[in-house]
Image: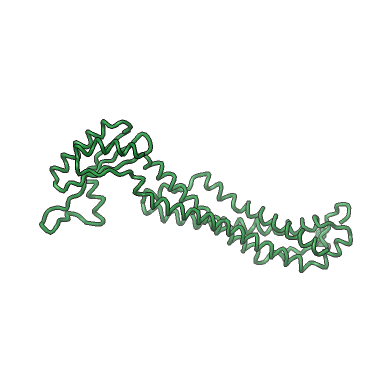
Length: 306
């Protein structure tokens, strides 16, 4: 190997010299890498989906306020709702408002209460009137106070809530799941590095005698490490490609399943082009990590060996 000659140990039919037979580091390693890449891509896709859902939902409801008229008497409730709509229109910072039609409210509660629900006395169960308010900015405490001062005098039974407060527990839970997905990606990267480390050490031990001969012929540690690095690079490239393909099948299948639910919060978490680009980078990064791990492992072992 002196003078930069690319020796690998034994002469092959093509005139090349092989230090490490390629079959030694093949076998299960590409499939281990494929599984790691597939799980990493799926976990990353889950984290990206949750992040998109939270960001889009927050942006959509950040300036949303709901006014409920809780009066049980239908005529009084309708009158208070009309006065509340007029009063809200005079509050500075209101970008728009709409009283939700009764038919839409009935459709919302129909899955839980059915149609034509009546109480024990035979009268219809009162459903609060809802007014959807859109502010020009976030629903701050000052904005809510201004709405309260305008609405309560004309609609004493009104209740005013920022829509973001209703979904805060949901957002917190989704952010926790997103952090869990990131942790899983980090753990899988560590597991991949550990698997490559063990494979490199095993191959190094199996070829110890050959490596010692190569060193006696003038070969350097860097040249030996390059052979291991190239071998694991082939395994990682093939395994990463297979793993990404498996992950895409799972991601697309799950996406189609969730799309059938027709839930707005789920639909807002759809992956965008930049998310798909990140997923495509997973096998590339896995290959680079595997090659770097193999190189560092071999160099460290060779320094101890010789």
